[in-house]
Image (tube, rainbow, N blue to C red):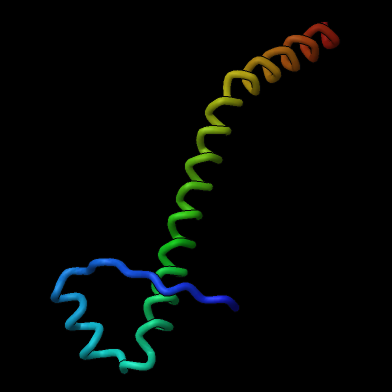
Length: 78
């Protein structure tokens, strides 16, 4: 896999904890895994929002179809 060197800023206390708890040669992998996990959570949240918006947008259409179905079924029974 091709890699890219990236510079970003973190609070001092976070950087200190990273240095304390993660070995020098393992920090890039650690940060990569943390970013992957967070990005997956963000993508999942976006998908859930899109699904909710889609369901809400279709709600009135579904209600209309249900009403048509109820009306046609009632006509056949009469």
